[in-house]
Image (cartoon, rainbow, N blue to C red):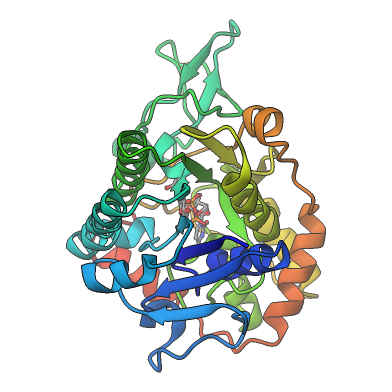
Amino acid sequence: MARVLITGGAGFIGSHATDALLAAGYDVRILDNLSPQVHGSDCQRPAYLAREAELLVGDVTEANIVEQALRGTDMVLHLASAVGVGQSMYDIEPYVRTNELGTAVLLQALSRHPVERLVVASSMSIYGEGLYRTHDQSVVDGGERSVERLRRGEWDLRDASGELLEPVPTPETKSPSLSSVYALNKFAQERMCLITGKAYGIPTLALRFFNVFGPRQALSNPYTGVLAIFAARLLNGRPPLVFEDGEQRRDFVHVHDVARACRIALETEHAQNVFNVGSGQSRTILSVAEDLADVMGRRDIKPEITRKFRAGDIRHCFADIGKSRDLLGLEPHIAFKDGLEELAAYLADQIADDQAERATNELLQRGLVA
Ligand code: UD1
């Protein structure tokens, strides 16, 4: 059976992709630096990582170890990345190094030893705001929200005449609007992979993940997604801190569905292509805070609506999954509530090291939350 190299395979999404590929009969080799921010300061192989997977500990920016990792590999799933949008706005150099230079090092090696398939993790962050519909039914890009308007608590997007814009699902055809270093990194990764893949005859796909959630989400990492941040607070008996008015919408996709998308992307004939990986459903942040408190048995803790905002945050973005459904047969299997229950059960066993506060303070100090 084919051997797949998963960069970043010890992480949240990578470890689930590992399980999905092993279950489908692939051999899996992982290259991962076991970053302390995700894996804790002892940098041990995580207990959840499948034993059958071979783990090489090393950094994707080191050419020697990347060469070594590629030896005898048939396909590559490139997930290794630094993933905090807020953090990318002040750890600029490490973000560009890991995300862009790391990808360049991988591609340099692949240009010498091409593989049968390359799949790279991109992100909904490249869209910026999602698509919107005007009151006369035309579909427009959301544009950006000005800081002045956010300071006045005017969270929603409006057209030139002041009419409210209605968010609609965002397809892959929406032009990118890059508003964080992380978004720029992700767009660079996907383009670099597609360009190099084409030049060297490596069938390549970029998967634009929406808000991924599920077990193994690193509670200790303050830059993990909002559900893990909220869960850490609830585990400590504290209310989730909801930015803006809580009515901002996202698309939460379960990590098992994402892992399956990774496997399908390695097998499909529709290469040289980008695909959204989402649930196709949108939820407000306030509603997910309440749903989570519910499944965690903490209905007594009400989310706190702070009316603060994070620099660079978008108002709404959720996936149009028509293309991935039609071409990849990708249909979400896990219902949101079932996914939350699984997350809650996993979290109940975790020691919640609630660092969300530290992350928010860090952003506050730098003027990135107001
Ligand atoms: C961003 C990226 C996404 C990336 C993800 C995880 C964008 C558009 N998307 O998503 O690609 O995969 O981060 O790094 O940049 N929130 C609170 N309270 C909190 C934390 C967050 O209310 O304590 C709110 C945010 O203001 C936001 C929503 O929850 O409205 C989602 O935040 P988050 O989970 O960080 O993800 P995104 O910013 O959507």
